[in-house]
Length: 227
Length: 267
Image 1 (cartoon, rainbow over the protein chains, first blue to last red):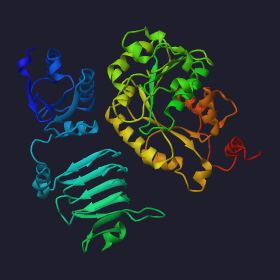
Image 2: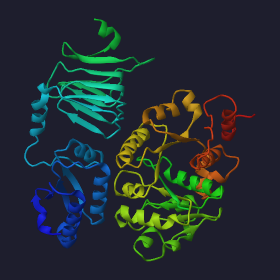
Image 3: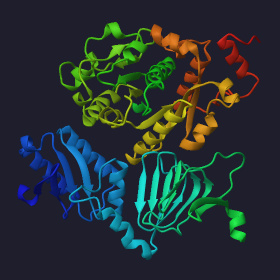
Image 4: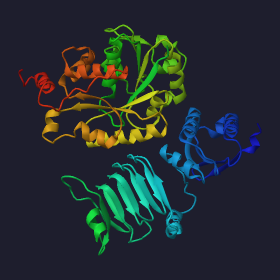
């Protein structure tokens, strides 16, 4: 295996490696060969790997991370254009973006797709530490636990209990709504308005939250839907 | 025969990982299973203290990993039960002394001679935790009925699921039925409702647990203790038997037994 195939760049806070094409297991082996040949260069480094559009699942990434950590290298971020790879990286606590210029582009992403009405669907429980960010709408079939966070450019629908932090209309859409079977978020934001849930008693009913006269207002879904 | 590796973890510190490791290990070994408990909390060693084996340590996990001894030299035989062993952690090193693949290698080497390997994870979600779950066939998450502990347990479950270790099973430790009754403590239902994973067992709050850990004799070996009974039931469930949960919430039967543990109720 030729080590020239691997492109290594120094970046502000670490080392960037691009492995955009080719069979992953071969490329991974080549990467480790390269690292082992240049031990002193890599030891203690923070590594960013750009994997291009390749789909990598959590086990691939965790074995990569473990193998790197055996070599005293910290896997810092995985850059990818694949949503699956990005999500797997996030689940493992890896960064999916590195700060190369200013933090501005993030907001542009939300703005860019707002009129596209694109939604993502998540069939899982979002647990503490999970963060989902999407420029369109977000639909969750499952619970959103305290400590989890959802940020959507559009609407947020949680078919389950909503107890984490949600931000609908994150790019400024004041018409965005948040619906849930049990609307008890730690914090609920719509556009630039922030609210917290009132203390609730008794049986929970599905509710919808939206902005009314600049205030976040939650209403019983059954009454709302008859209006 | 090949041993199964159970890792006991919690995220938050002080909820009872080490106590649970010692007691589940003892309860399994008591049924005749061959068990090794590994203390993966390198630098903050205390499973040896809870098991009462501190003064027998010669070699530790890091010595075995770094080749200063054979693995079986680091295995300390328990003083109460045959076929229960402890691999202590090193007190003078830190988490970086062991890597996830070292843990996998050590556990694989142990598997052939044992039925169960129980790994006591350190608190947190960093290197030490990664080391502890790397070899796991199954993860057991332990929590207390407290909002902060449950929050950390939720985070840990998310990470374990992301590592594709399967859905962990849940232990709720230090539940006080009296406080639950007065609405001053989360109930087991509240905890299970939030975490949405299989409940392996509930250990009631019991002052005897503290006394037994200080003495270095696991409470699972005390036939009169309700907490000990809870640990023995958990061991049975780990072995695949269908043992009903101790019913701590009902006013009859077990509840009276708890009162008598606390010395308040006479029946």
